[in-house]
Image 1: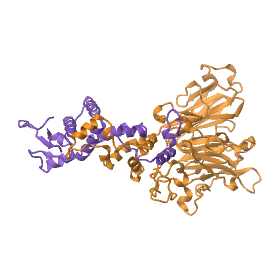
Image 2: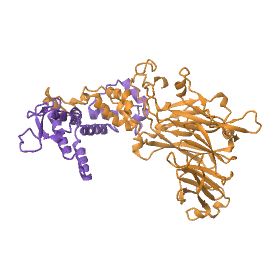
Image 3: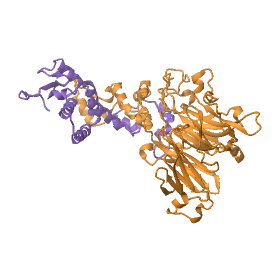
Image 4: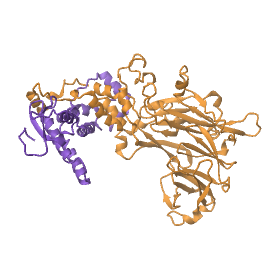
Length: 463
Length: 173
């Protein structure tokens, strides 16, 4: 960086004119004359985008001092509507090998969301072993959760052993390997989920916490009962929270897994599962994860925040053999819908109170007749009768006949309107820019490993 | 909005203010009331014929502020949609000034306690910063880069994604 001149006074003729006119009574105002209070107000407007904030903090020492000040950070409101910078998507390389997939990052189409941040910053090659040895399973805010891909055995995946995990933030290239608990190594896993706290970026000790420390991972595992002859077990939620040990026991600095203990008072009817395959993952909506338990005709629901289970009885009219899908409408107290496919009949059941409300048959549709009019319909499509749910979103499901690979259609659950749809079926994981971005007050390497005066902002010890 | 003149016949009382470099300005009382400082002076009966001296506000920004207050005071209550829009347009045009004037307005509006103008100028300054690289910001605002090259490198490393935008440059920062 070339040395800079002392001030802007020689930049334009206008500035020189002003200096000649300058009298002691009316000095020219420059940015340096603005009180910190005003500059802070100005810079607060930049908090809408992490990119603007990072760049403002790189302008000069004074701006950096203001932006990294704890009072400034406390005054920032977390933006209500975060814009997704792009989606990670899996694309199949060949139709015959469903496991042969490549992960790509597709930047958001609106330039306002990414502000021109280059897509290559979302590359995952920085992970140990490279991108190809991990499989993306979840994303939230700016961080991703990946499981170790076990190349050697597909059997391992089928058995779904407790996986090796990594949590990472692509743009800042930070990652944290999550160790397995030794005694859970051979437990089978029903699902792994990532949660990001939406709380303030300032913790109770007045330190900023980066986005990489505001998450927790929930792993739902199947544990066999000991001493019972049949393969009967229960589901347990293991939680990994990097802050947990900090909170309750500050002597142990190693974050570790802990079992989310069910509330025994309410959990008298505990969950019994016949093998892992009896619990089929249905979906995740409004802070809860849903599994269908085939043998019992029930839904197993895990509340993500309280990590408590709930068992919901499904209507008796749903038979165990049918394909199920849970669709939850957008709002928190929205109704819960279950889509049930039996042959070519689609039925929609709804309940308003999760757990204790009655199920109401909302709609029923014969798919063969309803889809006859849409493009691509073939006579034989429904002959075998089996239908699959491709994807479900609020108020809508996408279906396809089992043998078909390309022909899909969506059903609106309110109006039961059927329409052909294309380009669905790729799992997409949204990713945002980090909030708050990590900004250190001292930019020279901190000698005191985060213990000095910059400790509230310094990230030396996890850099 | 020139220097003071005798305007005795007007029923609306005119308030006189004096800039730091001795220029006199006049505005209706309603306009002066938009400024917290002037309002308190008027309430305390300090507004006399000699005018209220504003020691830190020069003539140029003061002329703008008087302009702003007069416009906003005339349309303060019971705005129709068109009037509100016109006022918005006025604001947008009003704040299209160079950075020197912007600083003057920021400081003067803050000193005089003209809330609307203060917000307007803050927003305008923030808009100038948005979407710019640090180098562009320094240029716009005439800021001296006081980071050492080592520090700058460290800053770039800290949030690399924010500094490499379109085409990958040969250097990291």
